[in-house]
Length: 214
Image 1: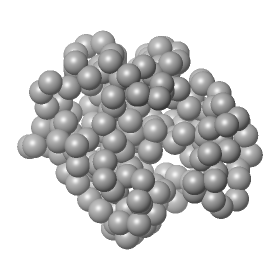
Image 2: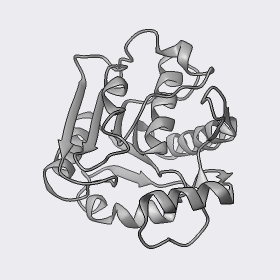
Image 3: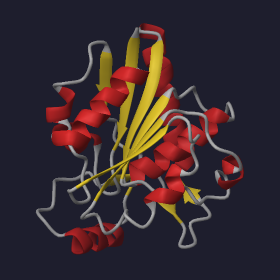
Image 4: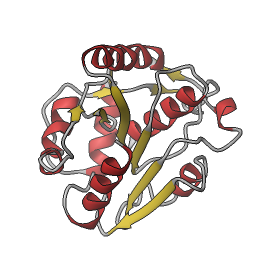
């Protein structure tokens, strides 16, 4: 059986950047798993880009700087999210025509918020079926569109990963974990910062989870 694994990058990143980051993990994916790293359709505002790189520091990657949605200050509206849903629906439908099979999400940071929102929509048959999801440095979606869909645990197998040195995500990950069914959710911490682990115990856990659910 084939499996499509869609990796959703973080805020201000793009698909090519995430694909390069995931290279050590991609080399070890189980046979039959196709990794896709799409670029989000929404351009990031220049002010948001400056704020992000001031917060995290480090070398600034090449553009484009994209996001899956542009949240209002109160988080109640995800502007542009409709474009994201349309883009990812088309990606899944095109792949399913070529190689029908299972579909998984691997979301990082804002990509994890987006992935959780898509999982909620999928559970209510408002998005193509998602069979499993991995959330790295995630948090709970807050938009008015998604919140009503989170009234009971989502019955989608989920793996939640957070770095011990990730000051951004550490305080937000537990509420996201609790949105998913207790019988099929897993939480793993690792020693790293706000990045996707591609080696070590956390990476091994992701690969094992994909193999078990893909």
